[in-house]
Image (cartoon, rainbow, N blue to C red; front, top):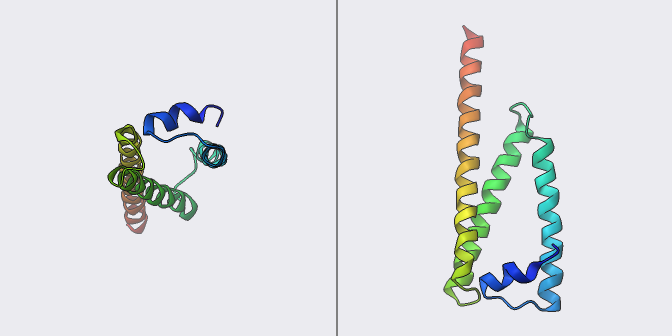
Length: 114
């Protein structure tokens, strides 16, 4: 948000007024999403928590695909690869959490039926 030049330079993208505007606006969105997850970190398993997990998985996979695409067409340098790998890692981590929560929820339902 405050220093987009460094990140964009590592990706091989020149900081222009338009790019800076978009980078700052998107960083504000990311800060909001981070706050949302921070305040929901201790939430019980629910449809809302599941929606947060699935939404994040989808967003991370789209971001990773876009990063790989931008690299392949030459709009970004190989410096974008760490971001792509982090996005894939986050998607896998959220998938693991989502599956673990679903398994625990299924076990709890089965125990209540007995």
